[in-house]
Image 1 (cartoon, rainbow, N blue to C red):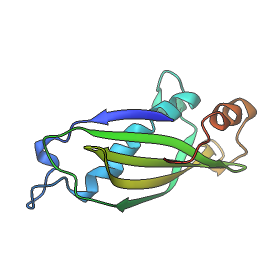
Image 2 (image 1 turned 30 degrees about the horizontal axis):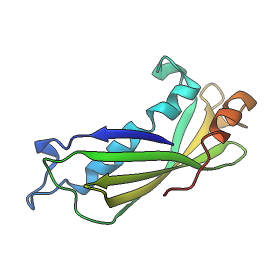
Image 3 (image 1 turned 60 degrees about the vertical axis):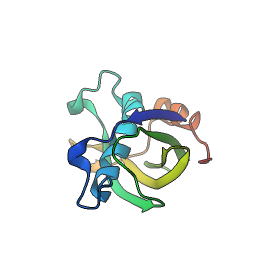
Image 4 (image 1 turned 90 degrees about the vertical axis):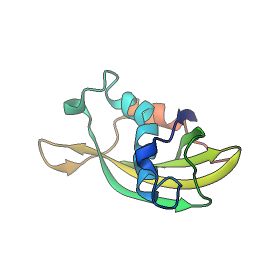
Length: 132
């Protein structure tokens, strides 16, 4: 499991004074960076062989400006050419959002998905866990 801390920025708030719901998907993408580094350690975007096939976010409680948010990230399961990443967002030790992202191993030259190569699969397998 990976842990990342973000500080909500003022412009991420909405008219109600809490973090806008569109922001959380971006935070979760930021939290996936350690997973992206498995596929391209130098974070060369042109060498990243992943595409995002699906995201989902469930809002559990309001997120407020002025206090850090802890993002927890892990791998839920691994398929043939894809894997599911789970996310949790916590503020003041309260679960405020959960989410999942389906990442697909993709060959941009052929424009097709392909089986996850073993070196990546084994690194991802080491990260399989359940949120908690």
